[in-house]
Amino acid sequence: MPKLTRDEMEEFLTTGSKILKLGTLTEDTYPYVNPLWYTYENDVFLVAGRSKALWVNHIKRNTKTSLCIDTYIAPYTRVIAETDAEILDAEWTGDWEHWAHRYLGEKEGHQYYEDTKHMPRVLVQLTPKKLSTWAGPGWHPRYQE
Image (cartoon, rainbow, N blue to C red; front, side, top):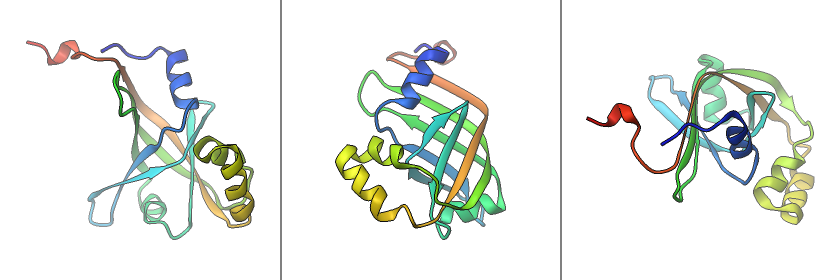
């Protein structure tokens, strides 16, 4: 169960159509996990959501978040992070077409982008404060007796 190297982590986070699971806290401090499209650039994660999304409102109250990006097929790989969230733009209509292509494919992604690009989104930056990675089968030595 080795850690990913920096290059392996970059490749894992920037290829394929893996979903970021974002953990926020509700008003009653219950964990709330929401699956999101993301991009990883310059050591931070960027996500975008509708202004009325629950997770966006959670971040407005508490910027401490966590995330998990993982695979479902062996050999399992994951990146887990504790992050500080920052709303960069509350009415973002920037260029996110590459996100749509990543998750929907070129043709369908282009159409989705064209159909919805005028709809403002909330652009959120997630800056990792603590990050861990894991790849492959086996147990970490700390779990072995």
